[in-house]
Amino acid sequence: MPDTCTLDTVTLDGSQGEGGGQILRTALTLSMITGTPLRLDHIRARRAKPGLLRQHLTAVQAAAQICGARVDGAALGSRSLHFVPGRIRGGDYRHAIGSAGSCTLVLQTILPALWFADAPSTVTVSGGTHNPAAPPADFLIHAWLPLMRRMGVDMDIELLRHGFYPAGGGEIRARVTPVAALKTLHLCERGTPLQARAVAVVAGVPVDVARRELTMVEAAALGAEVELRVLPAREGPGNALLLVDQHSEVTEVFVAFGERGLPAEAVAARVIKAARADRASDAAVGEHLADQLVLPLALARGGSLTTATLSSHLETNMEVVQRFLPLRFETTKTAQGHRIAANPAASGQPSSSCQSQTSFCIPPGVI
Image (cartoon, rainbow, N blue to C red; front, side):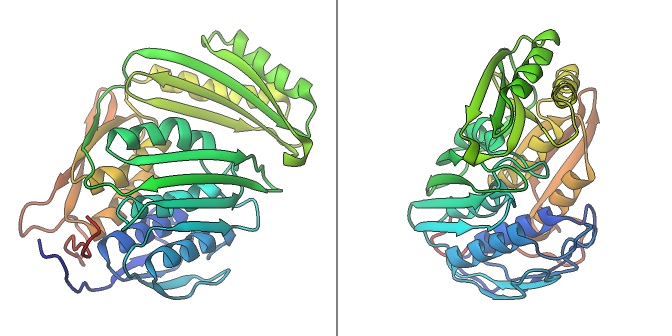
């Protein structure tokens, strides 16, 4: 593999597949890591409000800053983007979304690129940390981060302040040290049950709401320890119920959010239903965690997992990855649901059924 090369632009249609922001985020990450210019049209075309919202624009701006990219189309509402990356640089980065847009989705765009930077980095993002449309900060910390560490990533993630929808105002900080190479990860089973913990969080909301949620969890006989967490009113208003289900191989985080007119019992019922469905499956990881593992497996040039659900979101994410890297995701129906394996493409063979393919070209010093 050459140290340097000039790559053709990868052009993606943002309306394909699930048609949401994940296409943008994954494409930006891989554009930075491989040094491949990106052209993305019809951004978030399948969403009620298409184009770049604040959290997507922040992700674009953050990506551009860490690699000195040239960018056209970085504006609110933009439906097209041209992104030409430069070298990934470590440093101290701070980004404010300016709304309750998800901090976690911004972090997941840039953190994998910073694994291959030229120096350690600290990234602080302010905005929404507990947003119904995105994984909460607890998911990154308890479910995603331990698996990344198993793959050799030296990284810490800290929730500094909660930020609920629609007010936002939360803050997350991540510290990253560059990694020489990622280790492969194989998750065929979740392993031995270790601990389950339910946490009801309230800020500027009556404490009784959280107590009723925890009472429901205890009655569900999930074997979960319960914790009531009352935050300062200035961090609200907001309410979240989380269940952290830890096994020897993987940890899942289930969450539901309180909202006006929704009884506390209904919030608890959502978490209980999700936890029971996951436990009834023999698959190693749930739908959302599977989606977040596709990119790291690809960057490690191999790995596998089992998941109960092969969602459109997951399939679209795999297709985007295959446009940038010379590998194929093979999916097999199993008794557990679906097995997904990331395998390097055979020499001279395309990595997917897409018409336009690129080589895995790495800028000097990145990997």
